Image (cartoon, rainbow, N blue to C red; front, top):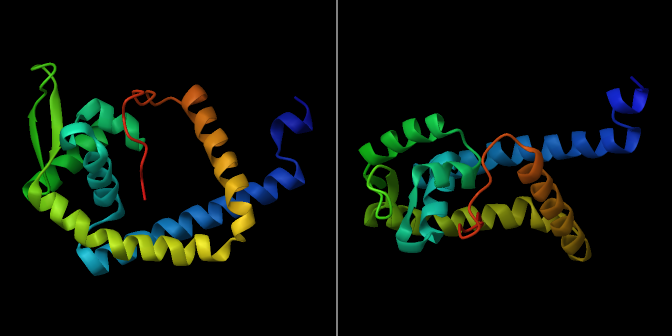
Length: 168
């Protein structure tokens, strides 16, 4: 095997390590802020946000798992905890009674609405305020291309075309 197949070149290594530092730290900061301000984990927020953008504020559990990039079993356990807190409900699918949907409750919507301003302020301050505005379009394009590659070559199911992709 050639060296190129085994290792990242120096530019790729620098980019990858920079991404990892940002992703890990940003996830920590977002989780910390959401827990402190809204008693939500970042995982809770991701689920609530996806459901809030879905038609009828509901998604089949398998579709929700594909959308947020989780294994179905992990999501199922997490949804049980969220249902206990009244943030979501599990209901028979309106399209296939054999399947189960996750449904955003009014309480879940209220918690998400309350959490969103602080979360958006943190994202703006920690992510966008540190980037030259002229670089944002290129960053967006690069991230969209990476996402397309993940969908094409990753092991999780591809989200349905009609599912929202809004995670702010």
